[in-house]
Length: 241
Ligand code: UDP
Picture 1 (tube, helix red, strand yellow):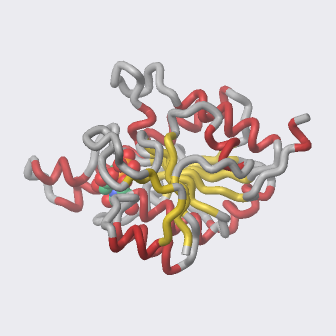
Picture 2 (cartoon, helix red, strand yellow):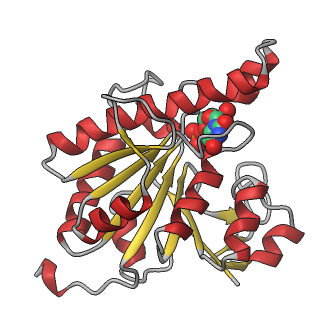
């Protein structure tokens, strides 16, 4: 039955904030929702979808927070990038426990901990149904993992960037404050920029626009959301040209 499923994309890149690694009681690595997502990814990979992930580090450290404490910005950002590697190791372990072929690749080299980022290898692994977890961001300070997601998606010829968030997609106003806020099912890059919707950091978003890669924003806490979007259901907000 599962093999009859039709999907609208073949290769996707999923960007997840480090926040997904915090559990219900806000403790890192404990009782977090990531297990549901990993199970869904296992199903999709078995059904021919090629998946890479970019994991953030905001559950542990963000450079902007540390620099406010007086730490040099470059060091702050490296601490942030190292946080993404810690999260990547945690994710890799879960994938292995679920018997999903996985490779953790980092833009920052730490021998014995993870593989060094290599595009050629990543492409081969993806076409062999191995899930790639990209960590270490871009490997440079002053960026975020949103930028890493856009760069890796473009490099790996992914069909789309899936950005899993805590919200359902893009509303005209904050739906918690304005219950009649309008929900956008589709937007184009220009609208997002003009209306100053906070989809991802601006550098990253401009890159997505310039390379014409669609961005789909959705609530990652909804069960089976990846499968539903991949089957063409209109959930979340799709941003295209
Ligand atoms: N970071 C960086 N360069 C990058 C990616 C990330 O300096 O290419 C640092 C930055 O300090 C950032 C932190 O790593 O705040 C964690 O990443 P991010 O804030 O994107 O994580 P998320 O919010 O997605 O969990």
